Image 1 (tube, each protein chain N blue to C red):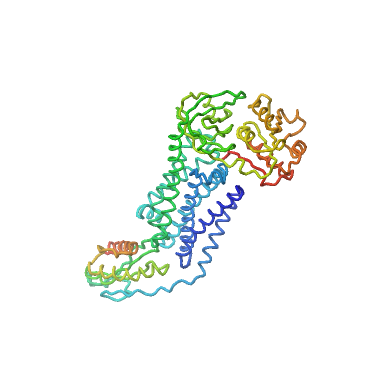
Image 2: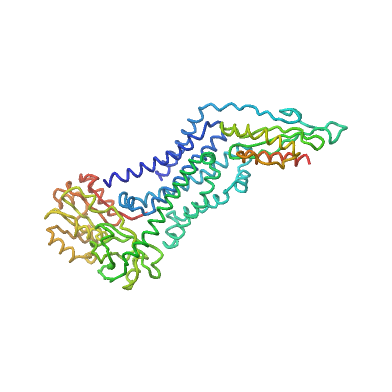
Length: 147
Length: 438
């Protein structure tokens, strides 16, 4: 029994030490991702359709947060007259510099494709499988809410 | 030399673990917030678990260098202890990763677990692998094992190979440390393939090669009395096996009831070019069946194994202490250890005079070699004390401290005798013992 306690305590101590050493390193500053799209970034509307006009006034919906091995992806989409006006990405993998770079590369392309295609049926960006998957799922869930 | 080798192997194992953690260290820039802490703790435990499993298989791969240097009994103990730790690491890894992802995605742990299981590559297989490992761990716990037949437990334990295979693919496809570093993937895969190859070579290919070369067959079964039997095994070119007195083989007798397992029995006599002898007391399911072996039965022998040999000896004087059936390997050493007249002593302790085996053989060896033979039988109360106590040993073996002492017997006897020898001032490096409990 004593060996079990020692092994457990030793492992926990080692884990805490290792993680603690990494906790003191400053995180890389996450730079904003500019999105080429019709509409502005970040989208400011919180979308209640104004009275009188129906499908032509923009509606903004937030999609599900989709988890990936590198962090969650969540998008907010603004739809007007059955067209995607803009997509803003609320969260994307950025926990380390590599994820950051991949996201900076992939997210603008995904957004461009989504707007061009008018939906979530878009190609994935190669080299950014998880980010693409998360983006597509989150976007689809947002569009599903709009109907 | 053989004292240094267990430490050397342990050092190598620790270095490997450090390298596995190092992969995580190099790949992780920083850890901020609860989600990061949990996920990275999950990654570290995952790397260690994947590494630990490889080490455990390597310990049991019957690699001759390990078997001779570290000793089969110590390898088995390490495997048992390490196995429990490895299963704990696997479970900790799964829980920490799931929890960490859940916090990052602001979902419940349950829904995160479901997402991981259903939509991440190879996660279903990995989960099944984990459950199998936990099941085997539960079944291997002492409390459960007592209720199972050894044969059943033995078969169940092989399920661990399946568990390892199932879990392997998720390591490379979802392991953060491997996804973006091809070198790490190659190294990891090489490690697994390497140990797998060693396993196949030493546990499957070599015994088959040896069986074909040596054509071992049961020659004769002899009743030694006292519920003890000797099996003489005949074959060809047996000196090529280079078995040393004190060593054992794992014997697989190809007949019904015995073919499914290879059990260890020590050689009780030096190997002749065409004959080997093993001797065993009918204490277990397997050994009791040996009595009924038919001459001509084919035998596959894996080995030789064991570090309980004359290689460890440093001093000119040697004391052999045998308890009950522990006389078996010591009988082989008694006949073959080089020693001057008067330098070799065998102390043979049994509970009852009828328990003595090889009595005449031992006498003959003692006379021929000028070695001392003490057979001590009876209960302590009749003898006026414990013949294996510190005082008794010192009194009966002059110059005890400058002897190399080999102890073999039931676990309790071995432990207390070794302790008595230490108290009497015999240095640890001069005490050699082998025991087989898990």
